[in-house]
Length: 478
Length: 82
Image (cartoon, rainbow over all chains, first blue to last red; front, top):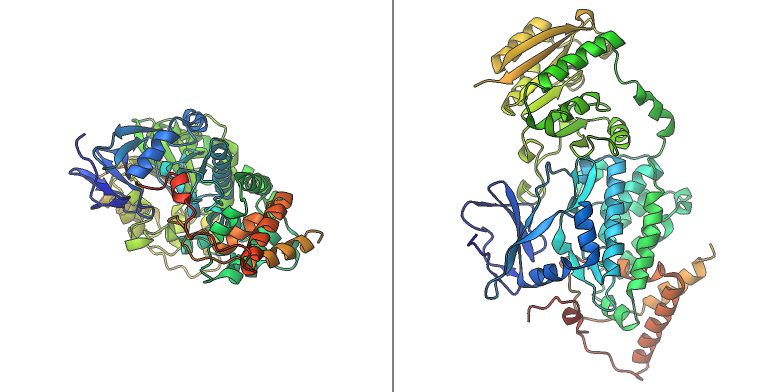
C-alpha cells in the first residue's frame, strides 16, 4: 500500500484516505485517527502521536492477552509512518455493526464489564482508556469485542479517569434505569447519542432509590457536583494532580463499579422468564414440519449473512446459523432476545449469532452527525437469507403496515426469503382482530401469494398447522 | 448515612478548587465528575482531599504562589507531538 494519510500535529489533512477507500462517516470524534474501508477490509489512520501509543500498546502484556482472547479487535500495523505523517493499522472486520440501543440488558452489561476489565488490565500496565463509549464495543456473535484501539493511552501521573462521566451516561445509568425502575433504556440511548446526563438520571430517582447501590454516589452526588461546578472554568484536573491523585483511586473506582454493574439485573423479570420456554402455538408434529421446511431452505446453499426477523427466542436462528457465516436474530420483544442471549452465549453457534432488539415497524434510523454517524439496519449489511416466520400478521395487523409495502421492503433487500403467512383462521390472528376494525382486505392467502410472486420467485410452498398457515421459500428476482 | 460527614467535608474542601488551564482530552471529563472520583476513593480519597485543601489554603493566605498553569501532563502522558 502506498497511500499514507497525512497528519500534522495530530490534525487530519483531508479526510478522504485514498483512492478506492471509503471513509467511515461515524469515525470523527477523536481527531487522532479515523476508520476507512478498502476492498472489504477495515483500516485506521493514526496521527504520529496515536501511532507512537499504538507501538507501545501492542507490546504490552495485557493487550496481547486480549488480542488472543479476541476481546480487543485483532489489529496489526499495515503501514509504518513516513516523515512525520501518521501510520495505518488494519483491524479484523466485525461481522455486523450494532448499537447499544439494539442490545439487550445482558449485552449492555457485558459491554460495560468488558470496558471495566480493560480499564483494570490497562491500568496495571500503565495505560488507560481515555473514553468510555459503548459504541466502542461490537460483537462477534454474542461475544463482545472492543474496537477502538486508539482509546488506549498512557496514563500520566495525577491524571483522573476522563471517561468516568461517559461511562455513567452511556452504560451505568441505562443499566440502572432498567434494573431499578423497570424502564427500557433503549429509547433513551437512541434518543440521545451521548446518553443520559447525571442531572436527568438524578431527577428520575425516587427517595427510595437513594438507598439502592450506587445511586447516591454515581447519580445524585455526581449530578450535584456537576451543577456546583458547571461553567466554573476551574482546572480541577491540575489541582487533583498536585494533591497526588493516583491510579489507585481509579483502580478502586473501577473495582467498585465492576461489583455494582455485575449485580444489576433487569427489574420484574423473574416470573415472566418461564413463559419464554414455550414460544410457539404449534403441536410437536406440525412444529417439526416447519423446522424441516426451514432446514431444507437454509441448507440449499451457504449464506454469508442471514437475518431472522421476529426471531423470538431463536429456534430458527440456530438452524440458519448452521448454514450461514453470521445470523442477526432480531425481535421487538427484549425479553425474548435476553432469553436467547443468556441461553446461547456459551453455545456452539454463539460466535455466529448476534441477537438484537429491533422493532421493524420502528427500526433504528440513520442518525447522529449528518445522519450518518449511526447507520440504519440495511446499511450495515444486507442479508442474503431472511427468515420471516410468524411475523407478517404482527406487521400488517398490529403495526398497520400495508402488506405490499412490507414485501417491497423485503424485495429491496434482494434476499432469499423464508416467509410464513398466518391466516385469519389462526388463533393468533383472531386474537389480533378481536378488538380492531378489519381494514386488511389483502390479508388472504391468495392475495399474499400473488403479492409475493410479483416480487420474488417462489420456489416452494407448504401448508402448516392444518392449513391455517403457509410457509414459502422464495428467491430474489433476477 | 455514616459517609455523609465525610462527603460534606470533601464537598466543602473541593469547593475551593480554582485554576485556568484547559483540560487535555477530546472528551470533557466534567469537573464535578472528576471531583467525585476523589469521593469514591474512600480513605485514600480523604487524604488526597486533605492535601488538595491544604494546597488551596496555602495559596489563599499567600504562603505559596499559584503553580504554573501547565503541569507538563502532556509530556508525561505521551500526548505531545514534539
